[in-house]
Structure formats: structure tokens, C-alpha cells
Amino acid sequence: MSSSLPLPVGASAETSPSLSRKDVQTLGLSALGGTLEFYDFVIYVFFATVLGKLFFPVDMPDWLRQLQTFGIFAAGYLSRPLGGIIIAHFGDILGRKRMFTLSIFMMAVPTLVIGLLPTYASIGVAAPLLLLAMRVLQGAAIGGEMPGAWVFVAEHVPAKRYGFGVGALTAGITGGILLGSLVAMAINRHYSPADVSDFAWRIPFILGGVFGLISVYLRRFLHETPVFQELAKRRTVARELPLKTILREHRAACVLVALLTWVLSAAVVVVVLMTPSYLQKVHGIAPTLALEANAVATLMLTLGCVLAGWANDRFGTRPVMLLGFGGLVLTSYLFYTGLPGTPTSLIWSYGLVGLFVGSIAMVPIVGVRAFPAAVRFSGLSFAYNMSYAIFGGLTPIIITLWVQKDVLAPAHYVAALAAMGFVLGLVPMSSRGYQKK
Image 1 (cartoon, rainbow, N blue to C red):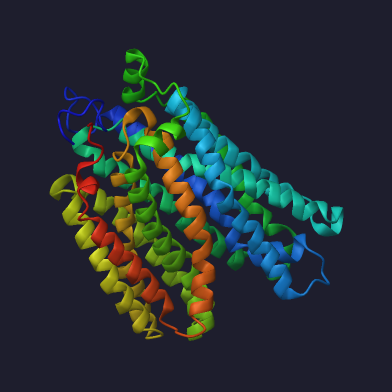
Image 2 (cartoon, one colour):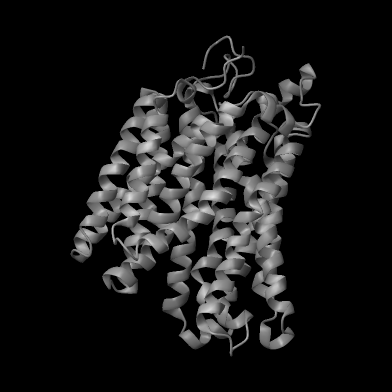
């Protein structure tokens, strides 16, 4: 970032370039909260089949039950923009910390409630309606949590550790997917299908809610960001509706972040969330092997986020974006064209593409600094959540229809979006961030 920029991302020039104990505490508590919150959001998909049988009539056709179950899941995506805009609005006016704590509270309570909900057999149509309401609240919470967490950490860590801080936090957030996958595997291995349907499906939701509330308590020990404190001291906190300023003055930044978010959503939704089902249905791979390979890929994704953040600080944004997204193009084709392969080749190639999916950490690294401090939270939240709601929702439909005609549809889609990420790495704003005119 240029030294002429007021209130740059990261700590002040007097701050040590190394992470202090306070920085590590901030990063650790933020990452832990992000892991638990994203776990709460995705655990639904791992038990969607069971939830469909319990929350809809038994005589409903299976295809319709599945459609409505995933429709409720999709409602979480659709409510992200609204929750993100509202939470970010007050985050730019009242402070990052308050909204950062509120978002995880809004996720923990609905998750706990889902684990305690009566089923359709007990209360009829009220059961799916309550489930829908909880998913809407979860979506609103995650819409505020992710941009809020990125801004919070970015404004705390020293400028020379900015990439590592954001990358490590992103790793913590994506670790929620891994945690959800591991918990689902443990529940299904420890309990019989009858036990899972009877009571065991509730365990991961109750655990997620309880640990989420613990995370709310732990965030009491976080401090407001130095950047927001300086804004408040200078009385430059946003006075008008921050979204109005963004749409009037920062449209280019919104477009850049929205396109990069499309890249992120393609990589996460296709490679991590959809591929286990694709492996089973298209290539006849055993469910256990598919889930184990997916767990390896998700672990490599988590490591890849940290690596991308570290490399950003060491080598700069543009080289990391070009190498990361270029590598994602190549490894996507390497993985999908090599299927079904052997168990060893499946795990190895899935893990490799997962590592390059870690390049998605560059999205918040670029996105946070694309907006000035006064409207940073709102700008990132608006562009990120609107794009994710559109493309995250459309991607499963596109891939499902496309794969009927071409089994390599996932490879083509991910590679095409990764190529766009490569091109966006050449855009000056990606490297320089917001420039005061």
C-alpha cells in the first residue's frame, strides 16, 4: 500500500512488523470463531438426506423432498446479502467488534435451535417452516461474519503481516468445512442409520450451537481495531448510508471483488462441496473413499490459504494470484481427467487441487484493501455477498445440468473461473488496493 494512503490496512508504521502476542490472540480467537461459525453453516448439507426424511411428509416423492431440503439450504445463501449489508452498515458506524460478536451469536443460536427442533411427525408443517427460519438467520449471520472477520483481522495485524493474517483467518474459516466433514463421518461411523435418524443427527447441531456461544464469550476479550478507533477519533466514521457511498464512488472495486468472489464460489462449491457426490454418482467411487479424499482436499485447502497469505507478504499479490490461479487451472484438469483412477491417485490429485483452491485467500486480501477504511466493511460485504448469493446459488444448477452432457463439466467450470482470476491478477487495483484521488 502506498505510504500516502490515510489509514492503510494493517497496523501503524510504529508497530513491529512481527505479530505481537496480542495480534496472535486476535488472530486465534477470530479464526476459531470463523471455524465454528462456518461449521454451523455447512453441517446442514452433511445431514440433508436425514433432515429431508424428518422434516417433510413421509409420503412426499423423494425428488420433491430432496428439492425442498436443498431449497431450505439455499435460503441461507439468499439471505446472506441482506444480513451482510445490515451488519456491515453498523460495523462501519458503531465499530467492527460489536458486529463481529453479533454475527457469531446470530449463527450459534439458530444452530442450537435446529438441534432441538421437533420434526414433522410431531408438529407437522411448522417443522420445515421453523427449519427455514433458522437457515435464513444463519445465512444473515454468515453474510456478516466473513467480511467482518477479514476486516477485523486486517485492521489489527501489522502491515507486513497483512497477507498472512488474512490467509490464516481464511484457513480457519475453511477449516469449518473440514470440521463438519469429520464430525459427519464420526457420527455415521459410530451410530447406525436408525440411530442417526432417531437422535444422533441432533448432536452436531447442538455441539455447534454450544461451542458457538462459547466463542461469543471469548470474543469479549478482543479489542476494537486501531483503524476504526482512529476513524472515530478523527470523526471520519461514515455518516451517510455507507452503501450509498460505495455505489456512488467505488463501483470499480465492487466489480473487482464480485468477480473474484465468483472465482472463490466456483472453487469452494464445485471442488469441495459438490465433488464428493460427483465422485459417487458419476464415477462409482465408494462413499467412504470419496469422503476421505474430500477430507484430504479440504485439509490441503486450509494449508493452501495460509501459504497464499504468507507468499503474498513475501513476493507480492500479483505473482501469487498468477501462480495460484494458473495452478488451479492445471490441477483441475489433472484431477477430473484422471478419474476414477486408483484410491492413491484419487487422494493425491484431489489433495493437490485442494492446495491450489487455497488461492481463494487472495480474494479477501485484495478485497479488504479495495475500499477506504470508512466504508471498508460495507463495501467488501456488499460486493462479496451479492456475488456469492448469485453465483454460489447458480453454480450447483449449472454443474448439475452441464454434467449430463459432459462429465468434465466441473473441470471446465473451475478452470474457466480460475483463468478469470489469473487475468484479474493483472488488474492494478488487485495489487495496489484503494488509491485516494
